[in-house]
Length: 211
Image (cartoon, rainbow, N blue to C red; front, side):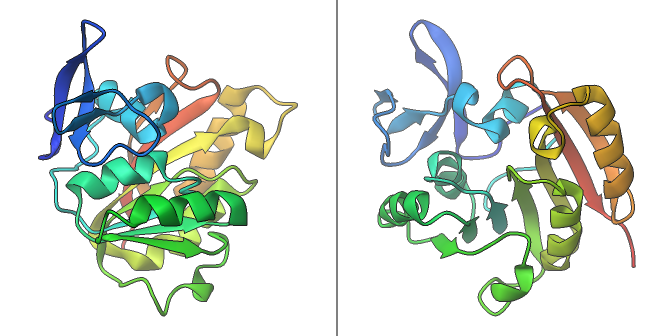
């Protein structure tokens, strides 16, 4: 699959790896104006490396749930349009604010992704992409609750973490349950295990079901 405009493969350590054009945030290796996008530190980066059809072409409006300290969402903001970054924990949000300082289209929000009503007055509707990387039980419910922000033709790009749902069960069984729940509000287009880069994670590409 083709990469979004603003994402290229560049040579780092004699390997062709993902990169975006933007200010480094956590000491990433650079190649001129390009900085490494490490798939081992980014579930979305891993999806691109594995060739999933994310639907990303560049310039999209994005809601990113689980932004943490901003590693992945900073790359997203390098090639996307307005990017709303939701993070629940205050400490990483402080780092996220620093990352956003050099990115005028990146909007950090100290909010709980399980409660989208608390940021509905800030985040626009009709967004192109919902990226979800939250370490909480009920990940399908989080996606369902935030579906309201997506355009009917938008995409959900989710990294489902099995251990956040149930540490005692086989991840494959957990993923099946999460997908069953997710299908109540989304049509699942593609899935792939991310174990090459992230243990016990499932990538999901989906679009909203018609209401």
